[in-house]
Amino acid sequence: MDIIKVAIADDHQIFRKGVILSLRQYNNIKFVFEADNGEDLIQKVSDNDPPDVILMDLKMPVKDGIETTKYLNKHFPAIRIIILTMYEDERFVGHLMDSGANGYLLKSTEPSEIKKAITDVMRTGFYLNNFVNRVLIKKNYAKQKFNPNLNSEVVISEREKEVLTLVCMEYTAHEIAQKMDISARTVEAIKDRLMERFGVKNSVGLVFYAMKNSLID
Image 1: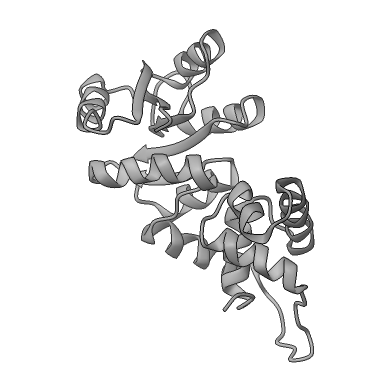
Image 2 (image 1 turned 180 degrees about the horizontal axis):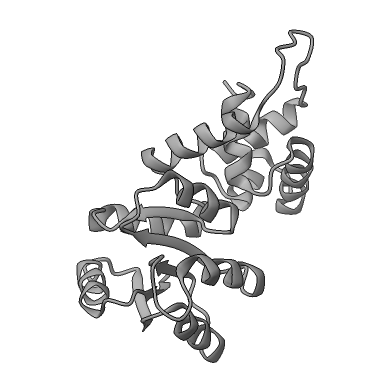
């Protein structure tokens, strides 16, 4: 079982220690360092072997979680970022997911779901619970101001539909390649083509575009 290296950034030490303790039961999760603000986190990421996943609070001194997420997404795009916060505000969810976060959890979340979020973002690049699903669907619908046109239809090929379906089922590019007997590079090319055509930035956008437009069965 591959070990997932995790860091946590939160200005409350007792909360950090509680999260670390609650996840100690999972042998595939290893906490590599803690930080008490965004600037401290960025420094530690730069000075050490970067973690695979970061659990990050939003409200922190010196540099908050929003600005830190944007910075890390630009300079360390391979790191998966899961927001772990008390803010149950739909505006934060949409903005953070657009800014590069891979998941959004409330601090009341059970350890088992935090563990699932960590493993899912490593496997598929994102974790979408019911709260985030509801927010992002509403956000995507709000962006779409159009007059209904029954002759306007999104058309995708069978291969594109198969890739899109497997993306929505949370398969990785490598797993999709194995299932379809094509190369992972071809899978990524198809995903890039679909993202460009649909006007979305990542796999999360593909999932919601597919759901919204009934592109998968």
